Image (cartoon, rainbow, N blue to C red):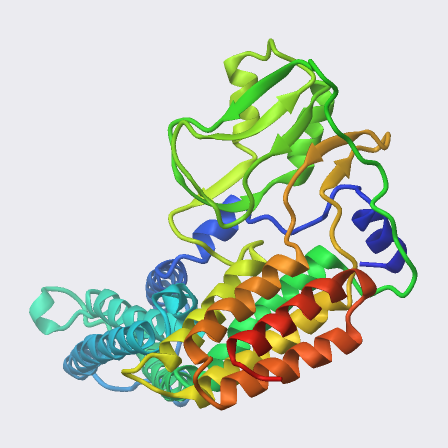
Length: 425
């Protein structure tokens, strides 16, 4: 994002925040990549035997055994691959259980989206399926026809085994590092930092106004925006589509919910100002710009990244674990995130169309809310210790010294709260 576009966006033009496409929503499912690899293996198991039949494969280093040897090798590969696939799946389940008990259940989606784990399961399953598929093409004397040994196909099965071994080593390395607290915190914090840059833009020194503003006049026509037939957590907003619809119907959309809020079926999520005669289909088109999910994700929700980090710190400060050092590691990551937000101007709640007419009033993430989320609960559970109060004071002191002027008041209030709760001068 260039500097001019960043300034214009925060003045109230349409934010260009990434929205998941249907393809992306499917592709991030746990089964998607393994399934694609298995399909590729099946295609390979059809193509290579065809090449063996129609192209001369008398090449060095290819399999040179007979039908019995080919069957034995493929059967061994198939049984070994399905056995190790079960082992990989079991290890994955243990890691998920560990993440849920030691960190927070809200991290499970992050572990399930690990591409190394998905690729490993895919390669082992694909090797099993490929070996069985090629095994069907081997013909010997007992088959009632001419002997046929797909040398290229059997050799490819051996190469798949080597690939599976390499992926298993990578999988073990990935598992042993992914459960380390430093890796977990860095992964969550890194994604949250990306969202900060996407939504807040780059830091600017000069003052940047909010641009156009809006408020309803007394007696203005309005229509309730109600979600119907579904419920869940507000996962993402299609703001460009929302602005386009508002402009088309000449209304202003005022949203009462923000990312991460739970929405029940039939709940009013906003108001369409400027018209009171919109039909049901038009209201439904506005409703569809609100993307819902069963659980919170970090598609657009910055606060969910902080929520995960705070949950890890709370679990570490619980009497059963009593691990304040882990809480301090989390505070270090929260410090880095809050510093990035504190250096940036607040996001305008008003979004205008190309004619500079406000079309959407939404609830963007605010620094004060993120600060409350990052500090309050950790302060509550860690106030009686030594490390947490000291770290909180240091973090807030640095934020106060570096934050933009509009963010300093909530930082000062939070610092006073920390000192009062911890009984520190």
